[in-house]
Image (tube, rainbow, N blue to C red; front, side, top):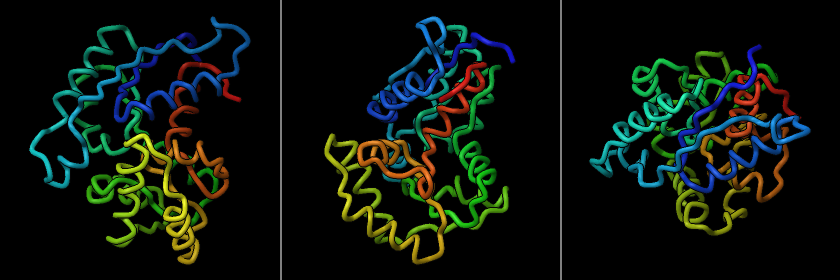
Length: 234
């Protein structure tokens, strides 16, 4: 595989998740010197309109123009492929991919491919309401033949509170609320849970959650990125 590829990271969605992704790439890359690490160009477009607010009709501000503009800039900078550190933004994946000539990795598909390879049978999908309403993970589970469970409205609102009122607001996640949701998933025969929002990836890291039940979409993306750059991961 060709080495020394440069990845363009479309970040800022949110900022802390972008920092976490960058940190994860550095820590996971099997490198013995600076020069063995991955070349990355990162945008931190924190002012990108909220993806969920637009998708559910809460805001008229369409984020796609900002996303496409950044994708083109990263391509012009000489990146070989792009990644988005936001699951919900993959609602616009096709338009972003059509705007550039370089590949745009799909975090949703890579996460479900990983789950399929690991032999999961039924996945609880934890993601933003925008992600759930557009069926990003549901459709991908169906494509790869994996059963899934989405939350009822009350529990889904609890997840949104954890994402927006806790993590995006710079607070610690309400783990009592989160653990009750996880118990609900396990009671309904889920043998794994997709952390389909990068803020939930931060939650997993901050609370040292295990890798057996929780499938961290951002970690899957990090491994794929390292692989595409011709490097090995730890």
